[in-house]
Amino acid sequence: MKYSLTYSNASKNDLRNIFLYIAADNLPRAVTYIDEIEAVIKNLLLFPRMGRVMEERPNHRRLIHGNHKIIYELNETNKRIMIKHVKNCAQMDKG
Image 1 (cartoon, rainbow, N blue to C red):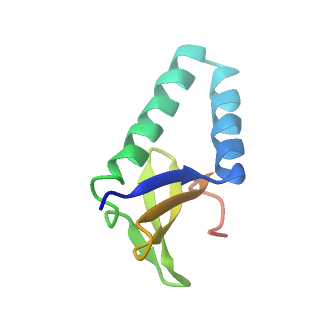
Image 2 (cartoon, rainbow, N blue to C red):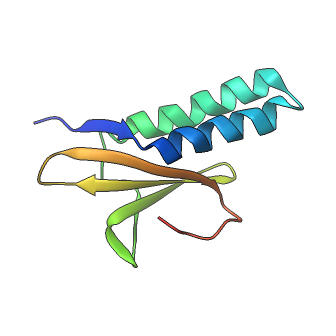
């Protein structure tokens, strides 16, 4: 059975804010950077366990891309991946 992938509203907002921040200086780079993040996220469909387990939340994992961490919840039972947040690495882990 294949995994399904969904985005939380918070993660959609995170991606939008990342785009707007980069686009203020370089619109083409904002587009390509978001494309890169989305490509990493889509790889989770093939390799759902590729992120590092977050000790404080065992069903959450973290991937790093550039200066951003992608936090996702992996539900093995239902074969679901939920993107929870995409945050700057300087920000604290809040799941």
